[in-house]
Image 1 (tube, rainbow, N blue to C red):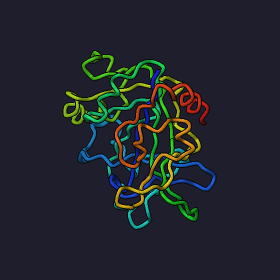
Image 2 (cartoon, one colour):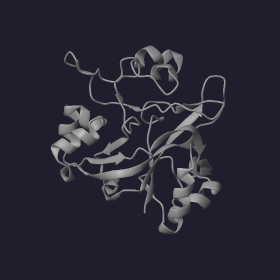
Image 3 (tube, rainbow, N blue to C red):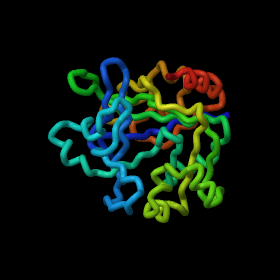
Image 4 (spheres, rainbow, N blue to C red):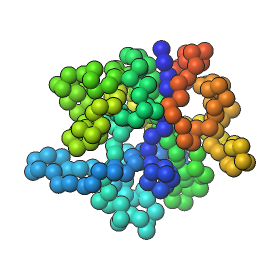
Length: 246
């Protein structure tokens, strides 16, 4: 069995903010902006998801999660809804994520994101687990038939927009989660503040979470990192911890 952690969602480098965290520990998962330009959909097809037409888990439009001066500007910005937690799919065409094709049924793909206090609730930006997939199947696009891609991954952002699919297809890795996958109701803190070699603040895996997921050979910076594969000596306890999250 394998457990791997992957960072997702809007952040300071992609979207210009962290996702909103509320006083009771709940949160909104806000996807990153999509770089593809907005296009009109033929009549009868679903509209392109934007921050203005997409609601979060608690009914508010995602545009409302932005600071008020930015909300109108973000209204028509398309979003890259990946991972998506309706049919539980995730895709990525980058070299850093290519190893996800090795995931097997029953493995856990754990998603974490940057969140900070929203509205009147003050909480510094930190990293939180926001959901996970129990893997049903994974692989490069070439491992699936065209029918399988549409039937299994049709709701994924890399598949449902043909412009993106044509561009990403040669290197695209797709992951499908089982019905045991979930977007959490409450975020689970995994980071604390450390320092880089120059003494600048750095988000690192907290001591508490090191006891769950291990030390990753000393590579504890989690704020900008490739997928983190949990060492085999920690996999069983990490899996038990993740499966208990709600």
